[in-house]
Length: 167
Image 1 (cartoon, rainbow, N blue to C red):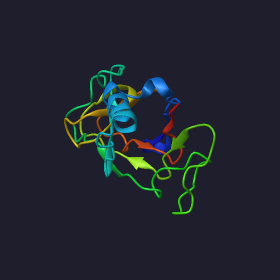
Image 2 (cartoon, rainbow, N blue to C red):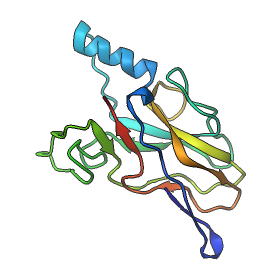
Image 3 (cartoon, rainbow, N blue to C red):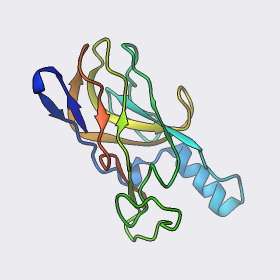
Image 4 (cartoon, helix red, strand yellow):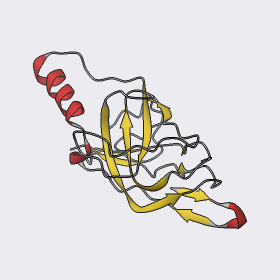
């Protein structure tokens, strides 16, 4: 993720690859129920990306940032916004996932509001099914934790920076 600061300084924030362990207990349970128990499938029309200052787990996101104009970022669940498993940028209706890695990533930048207070050191991110509260779906650490301070430019995950491997 690139975060541009004043004076031409650019800090790089990279999301770590999220492996199968990065799925939440809720996500795992909903998929077992859907595939094997004929229950309603987990199909959120929008997911919400959150930032945390302590590490998350399958049970809960870490300590989510709060205050200072922070809000989760809504990303519509669509072929245009998330790559098929065959590679980044696969966006057309005919590009249903056909890869062999179980990996997807964001096709577009995911940009948060510019901070109006210090957000602390961001160590990871989480994906929820609601703009506040809701159910944790996925979580992962950043490759390198980064401090976000009052007056910094709006943090943004570049296209392809959030990568999930479900397997």
